[in-house]
Amino acid sequence: MLKQSIAILFYALSFYVGLAQAQLLDRIVAVVEEDVILERELNAEVAAISSKLSSSNVMVPPEFVLRKQVLERMVVDKLQRQMAAKSGIQISDEMLSASVSDIAARNGMSVDAFRSELARQGMDYKSFEDNLRNEIIINQLRGREIGARVKVTDAEVQHYMETQSKAGQSGAQYHLGHILIAVPEGASASAIQKAKDRADQVIADLRGGKDFKQVAVGVSDDDNALKGGDLGWRSIGQIPSLFTDIVGTMNQGDVSEAIRSPSGFHIIKMLETEGGSQHIVTKTKVRHILIKTNELVDDAEAQKRLLALRERINDGDDFAALARAHSDDKGSAINGGSLDWVGPGALVPPFEEAMNKLAINEISAPVQTQFGWHMIQVLGRESQDNSEQFRKDKIRDEIRKRKIEEETELWLRRLRDEAYVEIDLDRL
Image (cartoon, rainbow, N blue to C red; front, side):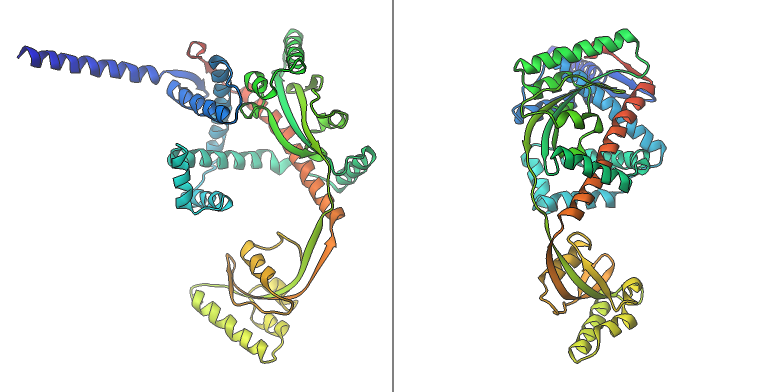
């Protein structure tokens, strides 16, 4: 009887200790508007980031520094998700599945193989899906809040090309590291000077030989801090305009002076540089006949109709005349099914893959895309130096990305400064 009473008492004590520990892990570390971040969420994210840094051979900073960086990123992330929810942005399960399939395909795997690989690396698939959904939602939010407002004019492209040419930088690529010492909007003169002094000390440390990635993880207020401040490879057009003049004068290994912007003080390190090359593109002159599927025409019927049309063409009927009479692509049908000359990436992948396998004048078997079933004929191919147009298109894209990046930095800083955020410093 005594043994049974002791066992019951021990069980009760264990239960309450476990409950107390669970409550301890569920303490709130930050209030973000109407939501909270729990200590167990922060602990899990810190552990994940620490593991990533270690696997990338980046020295993990002191725990309180890492926890502060990770918590700040979680705060900004939660603010964006709150805004997205208020804006009605949602990602369906079908969209999520399609994104997972795309990621698996880009890694040369089936979805099942991709899931197995995640498990092998110790990653929970549900957590991966949740993170991916969150990333898609935030990208859609940024696209609406920022991307839709950013425009690039022909004059900007031309001006940039002229400037780039004068500087002899037309093909240069730069691998950059970036650290931001943030300054809140409306900061006092003393606060600005304090940030400047901190930036100068960071510069001195870097020039004295400290590891850039480690310093970035520990002190940077930029969104890339937990990636070691690595901005990746960029052409001059992809670099924020604030840095372009400075980057053009830097050699590999150089660390810039502090660069002031509305967000704070920026520090750039030139990690690597390389030159450019000629761009040759193969264009294809192609035409097609499209049969769309609907309630009356299923896949089998669409293929049957196309095969019958191919037989008629082989027997001497005119492709263009049949396209005008039968193709459901009304835009090209009026031109005898012609899509004219197209470059790589202009058409959907299944169509382009089938087209690229055809000899000149050869007619394909029925090919399925999201638009329906196609019969394709290639009329010609030519390779040409497309460097000039490629360069213009690339520059336009680079300028747009640069503008979006600059706007995003300001937007995130404003979002954070204007939000109600209360952090329990004792939990850090």
